[in-house]
Image 1 (cartoon, one colour):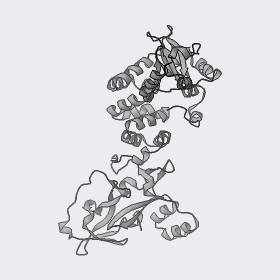
Image 2 (tube, helix red, strand yellow; image 1 turned 45 degrees about the vertical axis):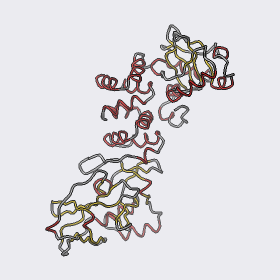
Image 3 (cartoon, one colour; image 1 turned 30 degrees about the vertical axis):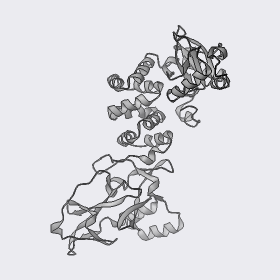
Image 4 (cartoon, one colour; image 1 turned 180 degrees about the vertical axis):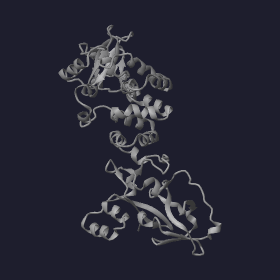
Length: 413
């Protein structure tokens, strides 16, 4: 086993045992579960050479021996998917995917495996800092008394970094396995550049869910800084009400540009929501709901649900509208499943339902949802045309601050 901090600065000698410099860094490929060494950085004075790992004949903590004389050594370029351990990882923040948090890398543990050198662990202990300060004996004594803070590399993931501020070319596959709320918590702690790199690397739906969970203070900054095509795709995959709220926080010119780049249907829904005042029911409602005509049978309605469910905010309530879009009634999912397959929706729908109008103040919206214990409330215009719904989690936003809301279980989504 080796620690990176004890390897850096060791002598590198050519095939004639002549010094060609000192080890300045080790380059690895992160395409494997445990990154393996592919190159080494040799520093001599102010000059640096990047050499293929295949040139290493012997590697020890005291020195590195190469297979060629210095005159035959030629510097190469890093390949895609490679990172510099000292430059990109050491002293940087990376993600502990098991602990769902950011950690600081104080040292890296390496081991020989199948003729190669691989990164196997991350040392986040105070002992690692003392080791780097030359207090190895003290660090060893402390490690006997205190449980070491070594994390298996397979449980961590780099974010971004680099000596020149380059973004690491990582896919964040491990990070994508976390709940979007956990990813958002991690992203909130990153620098703006790192936050953009993480979100841009996620699949579209996961990225959208993550942005929805992020603190509002960071959402607009994130979309303003990231690639516009990716930002527009994220907005298209967000709930329309959340996308509208986010666009309202962006500069007018930027919001218009993103709207024009969104998918047509989603852009149309968002534009409709942006017409309403933020402090009204129309300003927080979503246009993603399930509606059915009164003449449809229960069997047909269930088939329709299978088609529409992925795009609906909630299917606990199914709203019944006439040919002109007027709200006529509501059907619960339970009643729909218990109805005869040939029974028409209008025969078992609830005609007397609670609804609010698009200009209803938010305080009244919250009161209605709480008073009638609703999971969602329909929103109509002055002509009783159904324009959207407000779900209970959006109603919670009205009465609870963000810090309290995040402690509650997610009801929808």
